[in-house]
Image: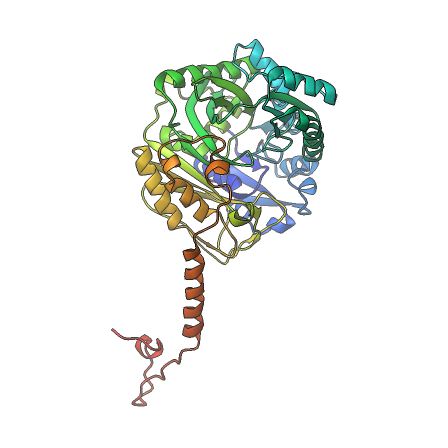
Length: 495
């Protein structure tokens, strides 16, 4: 087993990896930019190395600096977390060249599955259902338009090298196709350095269902059940749950087998996620493979009792999987809400700033994977995720109630968060009925605004605080004895 491990990431995921390493007796090395000098992952790690400028390209995305940091601290392995370099095949290859173990799949697998058109070809040859569409990228607008006409509108334009909703456009008619292709390609080039696009059929009101997979270098493959991630804004997930409300035993077995087939067809090793779209008739289609740990991995851990980071590290160290498919049993229901520094009243625009006060929710079945603290300055340079709030309960109804209570007790002052929005989503009849589709937020919460009562309470609190600050403090003992106690210094109070 490794004695020392470097985490090439920041925030809550870096803290989460550090804590598992501590349990395994592995020393940890954090990396950070100047703006993250006082970040929680820096404080939690055994040692930290500064990468320099806050610009991601000059810090968390600088492969040379990270490799040097690993070698100078005599690190044996690197965990990339998610985001930044986690799905960069060049980074995985450079780690191997430097004699460092990359905790993730081989570089060639990342390369193949990172290109969505190649991934579609692999799945098609492996017998995995794919969404009707192109298996090669295309730059000619006329050919793209012709393909869209053959597939039938609506269609979805997608970036071949991207994710997170960038380079994606829904096109409903032939008149929109040219401009949509041009803007999608331009956005993809800016975001990923690759403007290649392709077209596939746009499914109306599907569910986004994914399966966690694990594979070792000894030929063992398993899945760890499904997660539903249909509550999304701009193609980015905000609430995830497991099991899926739409899942049946037969469908779970069939989709789980398909996920394992994906892993085998691609030569996968380590942890990954196979994502599917599930239509209203129960048909499922391969969407993509995330060749890393997912943001929503904790809900799988909650229902299976498995530490996925621990298994990632063990697999990377050459150990065979310590669990079999038969041992994977889901118990209860788990939900995760992503807590960002963002303003849901203003199109979920980032809300950086100083956290003036934070109080985390506590209680049975509540877990908060957090990367910030009171007094921390949320930077503008990076993804604004603060924490992931996870609950586990006996069934879905109890999990929803527990999450609502946890959110109501989650206090973060100084920056805006989507907590009030998340509470209303969870309380909505559609969510509680399990009618969760990828268009859920645009359908039910398109122009969401908080109830006026929230601003009224804020005004009242301000007035009360202003009046309280002007109150007189009683002098000590009126008898002149000079005795001072809390009772004589509290000011105007009575029982």
